[in-house]
Length: 310
Image 1 (cartoon, rainbow, N blue to C red):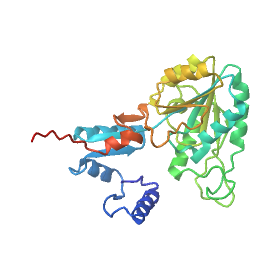
Image 2: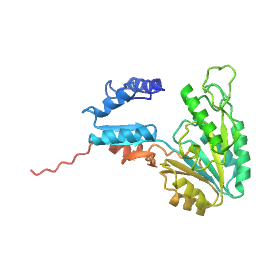
Image 3: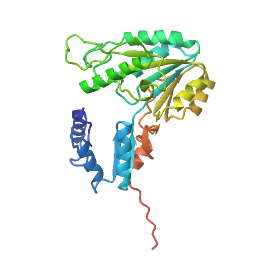
Image 4: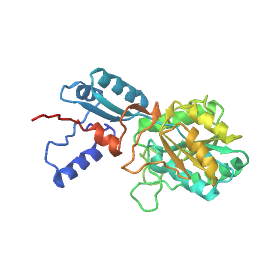
């Protein structure tokens, strides 16, 4: 196991706990490092398979390098998760689910909502409710009671998220809520980016097509479910998506045409339980067998068949 160099101790602690629980030493090992360590692991002849989670750019590189060496690969990449809000959706459900999805973990998770499309007349009320929900986010130390959102992982990432917001504004998006200059009392050196809402986000904008991985919500209006689905399918990613509706017909049409691997209906984070496969399509996943479920078991298992005659 090679953790991200930005949060290495979490994975190390998990392995320590596994050994305390009885896993024999040496069964699961941890090695820290950056690109050189990754390449050494991929190239080593004793490594027969590579499972990766990270950005799509690196996922593609890992897939190509390991695949060229004849190794099995599952490489999970980035996401740009769309949500479509239908006119018949429950507004309270939309506000609570979208707010939690976009701003949970400060947006630093591959299933976080990113773009919300309101169909027709629902848009104006949806916009006001989502801005209200974002304003209500309480920021601070993540382990303190009552805190909804902590900082982003590092100062370079903070600057990256802030740059995305600025570029979106220059490309024509309207900043309805700006978290770039957020400060939190008692934590002057925290990597803070507050909840941000951008209106008028389009696929031709960088904020509309690239993964930001921060607490930034893009919203826009579409005239129909079909238009929303067309925008969703135009994305280079295909990780997760959700629809908010009380119409079974709309939900079925969405499920059929979404072309995304993990689909939610009135769900903010379309995260499958551990016994279902986890992974996207298009630029969100490179490989065949996905994470979780029987796919994961098959990926880490060599099957043998013995044919005997006595």
